Length: 252
Image (cartoon, rainbow, N blue to C red):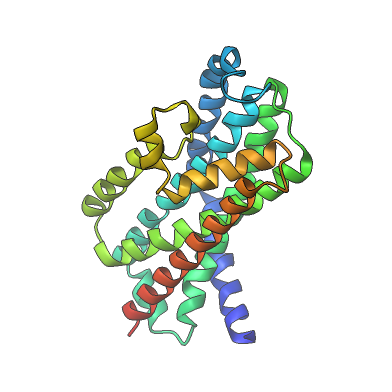
C-alpha cells in the first residue's frame, strides 16, 4: 500500500505540473458551461413553474455540473495518446511503478481539476440567482468527483486501446450526443413525451442528473437523490475496473 501511495503521488505531481504549466485548456474547457449558464439559463426563468422549481438555476446548474464532469473527463484521453506517441507511456511502463498508480495518479489530477472548475461554476451562478443549500452543493461535488473518476478511467483505457485521435474523437462524439439528449442535462426529462422518458430511464446518467438536482433542492432523504448516488458508484466501479484492466494489459 505504501508503494502504491508513493507511486500515485509521483504520477499525480507530474500530471499536475503539466496542467499548471499549460492552464489555457482548463480555462477553455470551463468557458462552455459558463456560457450555458449566462446565455441559456435566463431562458429557463419563465419556465420555472413547469420545471418543478421556483428557481430555474436549481434545475439547470446541477445538470451543467454533471455535463462538465462527463465531458471534461472523457476528453483527457487525448493527452494520453500524445504521451504514448512521445514515448512517455513506454518509459513509465519499464519502471517498477505500480500499474494501478499510473492510472490513479492521472485520474486524481483530473478529479482535482474538475472540482476546481465545478466550484468556480457554482460561484459564477450565485450572482445570477442560484439558491442551493451548502450541504447539497457539497454532496453534488462528491458525486461529480466520482463520476469524473469513472469517465477519466474509461477515457484513458480507450486511449490506450485506440492510440489514435482519428479513432478516438469520432467514438466520443458518437457517445456525447445521445448522453446530452437522454440524460436531461439541459432540461428535465419530465418535459419529454412518454416514449422518450421510457428510453431515458435506462440511461444511468439521467438518474445521476436527477439525484444532483434533488441535492440542490435539499432533498437529502429522497430515493431520487440516493438512487443517483448508487448509479454514480456503479459507474465508478465499472470505469475503474475497465481502466486498471487496460493499463495492466498494456504493461504485460
